[in-house]
Image (cartoon, rainbow, N blue to C red; front, top):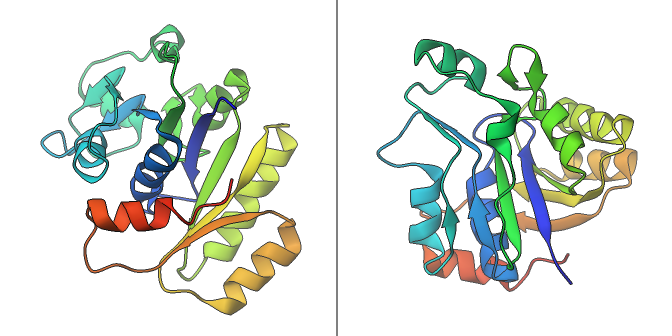
Length: 201
């Protein structure tokens, strides 16, 4: 079975890159981040290379200098992001695509992540982290995915487990939990391999 999957988060710093590394390892997939905003000396593509050696990395369509939403970072860098820039790489392998931020993050002032995701027709995995407010952010993200008729594979939870949060999200959404990633002191290839053996797609 061929997999081309978009990894979205319920917000910023939810663990999308760790989840993406696990998926690339589990599925022997390539990796692509369409837009990298900030941290150009240690990009998410660099992290994937370290955590999942051998993964084919497709170059970002845009590398922006500021750690901001793509529309703001592009404005500062005097770059215009065109829809045609965001063509999915051609590959015979499985492919994991990591969004920059959450679903409602603007790529341009007139074009959001969710618009691009819906246009691709590809399925989404949502990464949720345990923090105060994550129930609301997770359920709103799932509601949006449903409203846009986007194929949905399930949720990856990240961080110190909160059973109250987990239970209400699963009960209210009916979504599938693909994996629970515990809070790790460090992320390395061994950690990625351990979780790759557990994920259930």
